[in-house]
Length: 460
Image 1 (cartoon, rainbow, N blue to C red):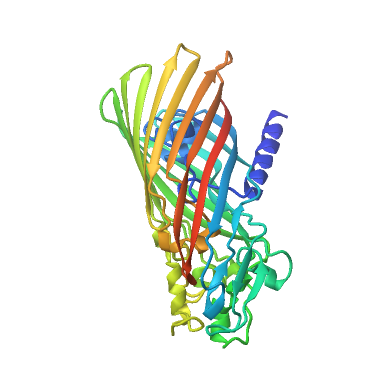
Image 2 (image 1 turned 90 degrees about the horizontal axis):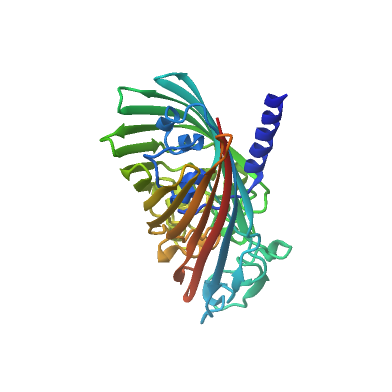
């Protein structure tokens, strides 16, 4: 009966994770995974203390064998964009947004996680975990866009509702995206001597994506350009949610360098995903949206038994995923704009993307004990956001501008030996401003700040 109840609970959490549009904080990757990890600003790779630590480093399974975690975060990102007045106002082929000043709707999300570890022997353990690592969500209601549907030259312009004028195809033109990524890992860890542990895991990924209100980009798609305008793209916008799947691997190590110092490292390869066919006219290479590789390294120093200081670095290779890393300026190579290369159109192999650069995040966290029952945490992290000033137009859909995080958390050990943990996050507001590439007389600003509260329960 107890096993059945746990199975039903796990199934409910899995359903919630797969149907919740997530928003992450380092680009579209999660700030951290697990309540304790989040209380340390995503640091503590070399100080795994709960079952969900295996999501950061599979080598953590052995030290936490026999532990289980369930957790959920309430996450609130505040997204907005603003466009200036234009001197062209849609004339001479310009595509002018607004001027608009809009806050994104839907600002509260629930993000769960769960993990279990099982001891095989004194030297080995295995684990399973399910969690969200990345995603994005925007809902831009209202606003207008003005453009000349006949292309360059002095001609009457048209204004349609919606950030990108999506109302030209009916409705109110509401624009935005939903992206949720769910990760299922099954792995194994083993010691190789008293001070060295290694781990490896198989990583299964499902992602769900939808885009709305971007139908006005149809003339810049490979489908439209290749047909000379005879074929309208059917896989660009407002097609509901599509799914894609992929399998990758993660490896990790943990080394006790001295009695007071521990080192850890973890690497997840780039995961090739099946294509999002319903958005093959939007993403590069006919709907390709792979998961970028990332590397984490961390060191923990324990001056005394009640205090630990963590220093971690994470690097994410966003630029290796064409749909994310390709510059939006590639679109000017499309034959329907000013070029001759079909592959530079939306949906092409070198099609316009979000122009994201790789991201390196530096994290510092401190943990200290207060008696036998209370453990406290605080942390700060910084990483230069991945969006260049030249890429703001498309990134209205995905304003991943956050750079700095402040966190606090604690754990209360119960009389049963089980634990309740909480973590609090505030991501400081950051703005990116740049020119509208279709209207150089207009500037676009995107910005965001965030907060979250996370609660988890751990038991043996």
